[in-house]
Length: 144
Image (cartoon, rainbow, N blue to C red; front, side, top):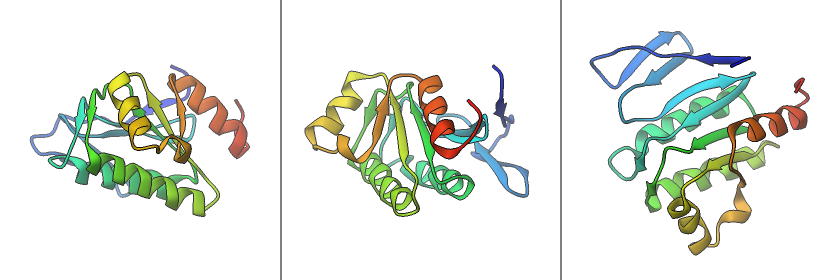
Protein backbone atom coordinates (compact mmCIF):
# COMPACT_ATOMS: atom_id res chain seq x y z
CA UNK A 1 0.00 0.00 0.00
CA UNK A 2 1.57 3.19 -1.16
CA UNK A 3 2.23 5.74 1.58
CA UNK A 4 1.25 3.45 4.47
CA UNK A 5 3.44 3.49 7.54
CA UNK A 6 2.51 0.95 10.21
CA UNK A 7 4.24 0.98 13.54
CA UNK A 8 3.94 -2.51 15.00
CA UNK A 9 5.67 -4.40 17.72
CA UNK A 10 5.36 -7.64 19.57
CA UNK A 11 5.13 -6.58 23.18
CA UNK A 12 4.20 -8.45 26.33
CA UNK A 13 2.48 -5.29 27.61
CA UNK A 14 -0.22 -3.18 26.03
CA UNK A 15 2.05 -0.23 25.24
CA UNK A 16 5.33 -0.27 23.36
CA UNK A 17 7.20 2.95 22.67
CA UNK A 18 8.63 2.96 19.16
CA UNK A 19 10.33 6.33 19.31
CA UNK A 20 10.11 9.51 21.35
CA UNK A 21 6.83 10.46 19.70
CA UNK A 22 5.20 7.26 18.44
CA UNK A 23 3.72 4.44 20.43
CA UNK A 24 1.31 1.71 19.52
CA UNK A 25 -1.03 -0.40 21.56
CA UNK A 26 -1.10 -4.06 20.65
CA UNK A 27 -3.56 -6.87 21.15
CA UNK A 28 -7.26 -6.04 21.35
CA UNK A 29 -6.57 -2.36 21.80
CA UNK A 30 -6.45 0.55 19.37
CA UNK A 31 -3.77 0.58 16.70
CA UNK A 32 -2.55 3.77 15.12
CA UNK A 33 -0.49 4.70 12.08
CA UNK A 34 -0.21 7.29 9.35
CA UNK A 35 -1.71 6.91 5.90
CA UNK A 36 -0.01 9.32 3.47
CA UNK A 37 0.72 11.62 6.39
CA UNK A 38 -2.78 11.42 7.89
CA UNK A 39 -3.13 9.91 11.37
CA UNK A 40 -5.36 6.86 11.55
CA UNK A 41 -6.68 5.21 14.69
CA UNK A 42 -8.03 1.68 14.21
CA UNK A 43 -10.44 0.43 16.83
CA UNK A 44 -10.79 -3.21 17.90
CA UNK A 45 -13.88 -5.37 17.43
CA UNK A 46 -15.51 -3.83 20.49
CA UNK A 47 -14.98 -0.55 22.32
CA UNK A 48 -16.47 -0.17 25.76
CA UNK A 49 -15.52 1.04 29.21
CA UNK A 50 -12.84 -1.68 29.48
CA UNK A 51 -10.69 -0.24 26.67
CA UNK A 52 -12.00 3.28 25.95
CA UNK A 53 -9.03 4.87 27.75
CA UNK A 54 -6.78 3.44 25.04
CA UNK A 55 -9.03 4.95 22.37
CA UNK A 56 -8.77 8.34 24.08
CA UNK A 57 -4.96 8.09 24.19
CA UNK A 58 -4.83 7.15 20.52
CA UNK A 59 -7.15 10.00 19.58
CA UNK A 60 -4.97 12.44 21.54
CA UNK A 61 -1.88 11.20 19.67
CA UNK A 62 -3.65 11.59 16.34
CA UNK A 63 -4.96 15.07 17.16
CA UNK A 64 -1.43 16.17 18.03
CA UNK A 65 -0.29 14.98 14.60
CA UNK A 66 -2.92 16.67 12.42
CA UNK A 67 -6.04 18.85 12.46
CA UNK A 68 -8.05 16.00 10.91
CA UNK A 69 -8.09 12.40 12.10
CA UNK A 70 -9.40 9.17 10.59
CA UNK A 71 -10.87 6.53 12.90
CA UNK A 72 -10.94 3.16 11.16
CA UNK A 73 -13.84 1.31 12.77
CA UNK A 74 -14.14 -1.34 10.06
CA UNK A 75 -13.32 -4.11 12.56
CA UNK A 76 -15.65 -2.72 15.23
CA UNK A 77 -19.00 -4.43 15.68
CA UNK A 78 -19.88 -3.01 19.12
CA UNK A 79 -19.37 0.36 20.75
CA UNK A 80 -21.00 1.69 23.89
CA UNK A 81 -21.71 5.19 25.11
CA UNK A 82 -18.16 5.63 26.47
CA UNK A 83 -16.82 5.12 22.95
CA UNK A 84 -19.36 7.50 21.48
CA UNK A 85 -18.53 10.14 24.10
CA UNK A 86 -14.81 9.83 23.33
CA UNK A 87 -15.42 10.18 19.60
CA UNK A 88 -17.75 13.13 20.13
CA UNK A 89 -15.24 14.90 22.38
CA UNK A 90 -12.47 14.36 19.82
CA UNK A 91 -14.70 15.61 17.00
CA UNK A 92 -15.50 18.82 18.88
CA UNK A 93 -11.84 19.46 19.71
CA UNK A 94 -10.77 18.87 16.12
CA UNK A 95 -13.57 21.05 14.73
CA UNK A 96 -12.53 23.86 17.12
CA UNK A 97 -9.06 23.61 15.57
CA UNK A 98 -10.37 23.71 12.00
CA UNK A 99 -10.24 19.96 11.40
CA UNK A 100 -12.61 17.03 11.47
CA UNK A 101 -13.01 13.49 12.72
CA UNK A 102 -13.70 11.00 9.94
CA UNK A 103 -15.21 7.64 10.88
CA UNK A 104 -14.81 4.63 8.61
CA UNK A 105 -17.71 2.38 9.57
CA UNK A 106 -18.83 -0.91 8.03
CA UNK A 107 -20.93 -2.51 10.77
CA UNK A 108 -24.61 -1.64 10.76
CA UNK A 109 -24.66 -2.00 14.54
CA UNK A 110 -22.14 0.84 14.98
CA UNK A 111 -23.95 3.04 12.48
CA UNK A 112 -27.22 2.30 14.29
CA UNK A 113 -25.77 3.54 17.61
CA UNK A 114 -24.85 6.88 16.04
CA UNK A 115 -28.21 7.09 14.26
CA UNK A 116 -30.16 6.29 17.42
CA UNK A 117 -28.30 8.98 19.37
CA UNK A 118 -28.73 11.42 16.47
CA UNK A 119 -24.97 12.10 16.33
CA UNK A 120 -24.11 11.47 12.68
CA UNK A 121 -23.92 15.21 11.95
CA UNK A 122 -20.87 15.50 14.25
CA UNK A 123 -18.72 13.24 12.06
CA UNK A 124 -17.98 12.61 8.42
CA UNK A 125 -18.83 8.94 7.97
CA UNK A 126 -17.40 6.94 5.08
CA UNK A 127 -17.27 3.23 4.25
CA UNK A 128 -13.70 3.05 2.95
CA UNK A 129 -10.31 4.08 4.33
CA UNK A 130 -9.11 5.14 0.87
CA UNK A 131 -12.05 7.52 0.51
CA UNK A 132 -11.44 9.02 3.95
CA UNK A 133 -7.73 9.53 3.33
CA UNK A 134 -8.12 11.00 -0.15
CA UNK A 135 -10.78 13.49 0.93
CA UNK A 136 -8.73 14.51 3.97
CA UNK A 137 -5.59 15.00 1.90
CA UNK A 138 -7.40 17.25 -0.52
CA UNK A 139 -8.93 19.29 2.31
CA UNK A 140 -5.57 19.65 4.07
CA UNK A 141 -3.56 20.42 0.92
CA UNK A 142 -1.78 17.06 0.64
CA UNK A 143 -1.23 15.51 -2.75
CA UNK A 144 -3.87 12.87 -3.40
